Length: 248
Image (tube, rainbow, N blue to C red; front, side):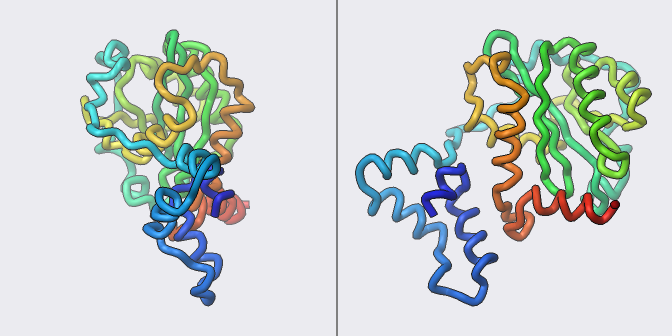
């Protein structure tokens, strides 16, 4: 159990993984409440402090997106296609290849692009040298070309100015970009939730320009190897591999 906590798994994920791994052995299953109780009450000394440091941190209050430092990037983008036009099979997650994206900001005008696939919850992190639309679009085009068409059908984004050149992205990749309604970031909630998890690795104030692509790949790998309750405690990596196999 300690190993899983050290890999940033939540107690609920550990409990779900144990139930899925040992379905016929109750002696090897434990509830997440018991795990929390063990960490906070029964653990002692340095081990306790180390394990508690890996638990998720929660905010006392959620703030609306347009009151964050990203506000200055918002503005009118031309030729947008509303999320309401997105295919139904993207909305109900019936077909893989529909992604949600955003920029995660750090200190000193630094940022990374975060991309999450809606069906499998698979995460990709992309190093971006600047927040101007040319730099962001170039990075997204390069990343998109790594994937087969069946695994990258659409991209849903917030209305940040970094996507002002979205038409160039679509022309270069044949991937349609859909935009959330103004001030409705929850319309790409899968990505929003993932960005919250990423703050455990990249807290506000960190200079993301110092973070290498190899480091980003390692963080994405850790999150992709965490079991998810919404996936029946399978991991995004497992679901993604199954999807890749199905189209091969």
